[in-house]
Length: 408
Ligand SMILES: [Zn+2]
Ligand SMILES: [Zn+2]
Image (cartoon, rainbow, N blue to C red):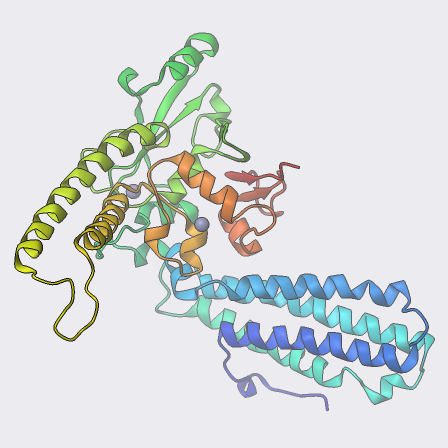
């Protein structure tokens, strides 16, 4: 039965509910297709024009599955109008499902049963898709018109309210097209010998993009007037150990975590000096951690007469306790030295402890393992973060900031 609805009859829906419903519809369409094939065609081979719908439906199923992994409250902290954006990315999926259903039904009507149209085998599917479309359109409009609507960077205070590492508010603003960075000259003490050689051979200059809200800064190379800002520079970087990932300095701005100005990292460029700095900081944190743990275990050792508690529960040996405490203090030390976060892990709800990186190479190594071309982030994230897959970007993206390539 066709649903005739006036706008006020459209009930609200949440994004997770819409994704779940659409996923179920894909499964339902696949089942109905199989039933029709069994009834009209089997045991003859299924014509290729019907078979062709299978991979299309699989693709839509994969897109829904990928969207379902996004943690909307977290995405909202990184991307403007995240809920409206997710809703907007569901509408083309509905459109393609409607096209698929119409196409398949038409093949059966044309070749197998002219009366099939009256029996409406996909009637419920049509109705639900139509209704979800109306719900999501309305959801999107309400989100955009909401009086409480805030930009993603406004949701991230500077300095962050939590002691945990968090993406800098100005990294979030940059991702959403608002660049508040300040420019400064890079002092020769901050240039590596390769940088000096480049200047000597090719001319040009190194500029520094300095975050207005924290101590983060990243240097980039310019050689011509057209490419003289961070959004236009042709300074493309890669690391020999990670040939499948290349990036521009703007990518590093988008991923930087808030760096307290009081730390001794102030004024350094973390993109290429991170390894050395991280090693020395880690050593100092680790030795401090080990000293604390040593003192604690000495006290525990003097009091303990047995390795078991009174209630009979096995108690950790001194060496086990020491190892555990050292590892947790090392994790804290690593978090404190982390300069970059992985936005893809953050937006699917993974913890910071597993995603803080002390330099650009560590970050791209992680991307090459966790977010490579076989399991890229959802397309709305690729578009927002200006990511290319084998050099190809979404239509609206002028050039990539991060390019993930296949190496085979
Ligand atoms: Zn910052
Ligand atoms: Zn990640």
